[in-house]
Image 1 (cartoon, rainbow over the protein chains, first blue to last red):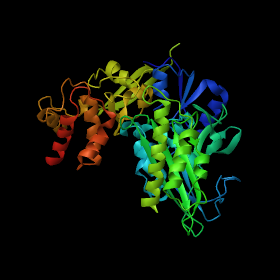
Image 2 (tube, one colour; image 1 turned 180 degrees about the vertical axis):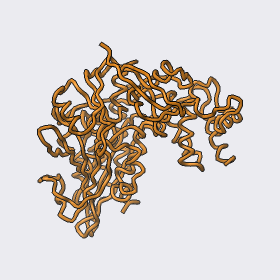
Image 3 (cartoon, rainbow over the protein chains, first blue to last red; image 1 turned 90 degrees about the vertical axis):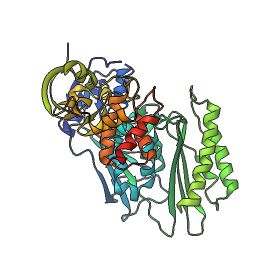
Image 4 (cartoon, chains in turn orange, purple; image 1 turned 45 degrees about the vertical axis):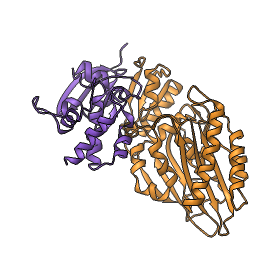
Length: 311
Length: 157
């Protein structure tokens, strides 16, 4: 229950950290909050040769709203690409959960993320854990990857070679694996914010079921529904955690809602399709069948919650 | 070849300088290098909360923190709650009065978690107390008397 030996280097700047990662590649791991990596090291599941500690670096923890600068991103994965006036929420990769949880800007502008934060582990873990560390860890049972998927987040990857933006849907490639190259660091998360307009209003909901508060959830759903002025659903996203090798979007289930004035029949149909569409792994705490059952229940609850209370 | 680092850290107001291997956990550093054995070690993977200390004022798992990460940071352990051996910290006194512990193994972690929680939220509801306690396991009490002890702090201002 103690880590294997490794070489520890406290990064003094982002450039320093990127230079070290370029030098050591896969042999090195970045240490962000350490709330997933250090337990894995204690259990010897992870035995990195080099640990590059990002905590001494300043300037990687921030929460800020900026007018869409384009970011060079052509495809935001949205039905409407953010226009020049739309707001983007920028979050530094080393921003800790406690900061996200307490951010008035996030509470006001990104309610899905705000609602999700108290479900992430325990207060002590949230004091140290970081958004970037969580996403780069790519645990499909974690809450934040699926929330980022539903929010159409974009992730900035930096290396000594330069920088690029990766869409959340392309970032999580399989369990504990991302599209980051061996020399890249996730440095920033950009979330396009929806604003109410004649074209549509978007409302969201996060729900999960865990055996005990703070444990890994047996199933969880992040949901986003957009209605136009006539009350017709123009966009819907149903995202599931612990439902496959990556966070999963049930696109067929969501399709049953789009174009409809959503009623009970549509909700039941979406839940039934989501039940079959996801690929939960099952474990000692919840069988595959039970996980699917929970997904159906949560799908119904979340859609009803949004339609009845959040518009 | 050992990867050794010089660590200067302030624990309970006292500054220590020690040499430690990078693989040493902060929990072991506090117990074995500094001799402060009030911080207990349970699961060593962040689940039980027994090793919770205050790291720069925030409750943190010392088993998920490397000793080298304490360099130039401030730590507070259960030994720092009171300097007078004959007088308990009000939170400790409340635990005694409400019978908030049995074997006591989880207690140091709970005290450090609750010290910070009450500083931020001095008038909590029972639900908030239970939420704040969620990261600390106790296998003796069933939590009822722990919750009572914390709620008594509110009553006594």
